Length: 81
Image (cartoon, rainbow, N blue to C red):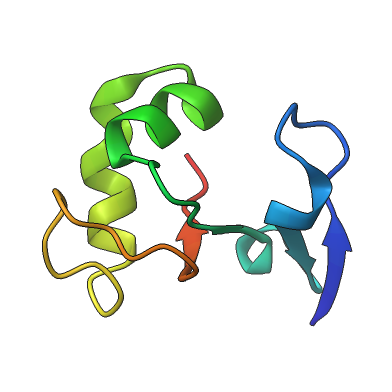
């Protein structure tokens, strides 16, 4: 797996990375939670649909136990639609 900065997002490159591998199924993006972030806001920013917060929460069950309290500094997966 190779980590690459995702320069297509308006989010600073040091907070979003893309992992690439052989095949589209292995591609994923990761995000470093910043203080003040919400799953609702991240879903709106990355997917254009705030209701996608549930998909982010499901993909990160080991990191996010309570969707209302996401830990700053944690690395989460941004699931592929």
